[in-house]
Length: 139
Image (cartoon, rainbow, N blue to C red; front, side, top):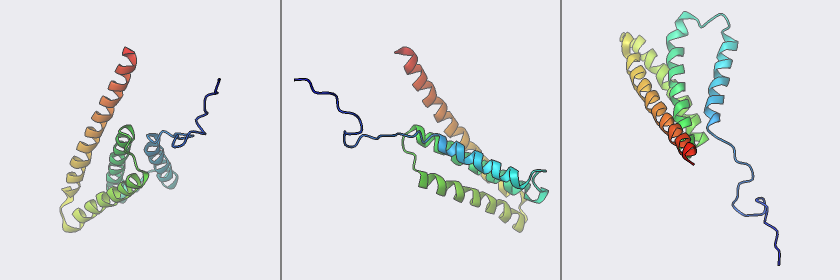
């Protein structure tokens, strides 16, 4: 007559432990920042400042893109990691190419593009957060 409820572990296709993948990009960025700080405690050498600043901007773009993907539930760690590394390398190569060919402001193209993407991702994250908290407040 009485059947006890089935625990979640016994039900097939039910995740036992669900991690919130939104925090992985933030954690990765903080670990990278701590690594750079441990190497250059007195500050970044002047010759590397242009390269590192654009690499950080590319990294921030990937982090905000990863947070957005996490909120949309489409986050994939392989896409995030490859995008993070490739975007940073491409940004540094763009600064280097500009220095080699004598166009010192070539980095500006990357700054405008990455900055625009950061603001776009941040606006989507903000809207998602507002919709989630507005819906919770109405219940």
